[in-house]
Image (cartoon, rainbow, N blue to C red; front, side, top):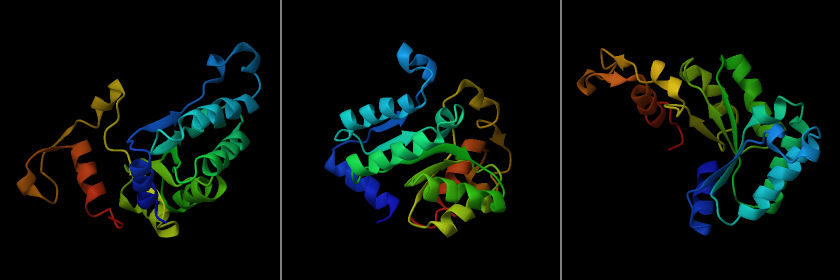
Length: 191
């Protein structure tokens, strides 16, 4: 089953468009847990168990695990989601963006090592930086960053592009609009 099919089925089954982000911050956990990375798994697994019938996806943030050497806990968490919330997809929030040879390894990391159903990616190195994900795992999903919610996003993402690019009839586009058009148009090979 493709990611999009899985996502749509979960949304219908749970009557939800809610995606729960799993961004555990060790320093915000209860005091006895702050120095035990296995508690990141315990904390997130409890959230998964409490919300599995209310969501259409879970989105663990890789940096929150990797920064404290808890990648094994992330692997356990994704397996827990697949086992205890069957049919609810996992979107690995990693915002990866690099040249093709490196992107192939990021694809393996996300989809094979962690077992994610989809991945967040940064497209700013161009379409060929996305191809390795699509080519190696066509049944998985990609969430292409277009516009982010952080205040500094305006610095670049809202820049006006003067020429309308290959579609002059569109007039002046902002950078995030161009990325969104490309992501839903020529970069989208799976509908």
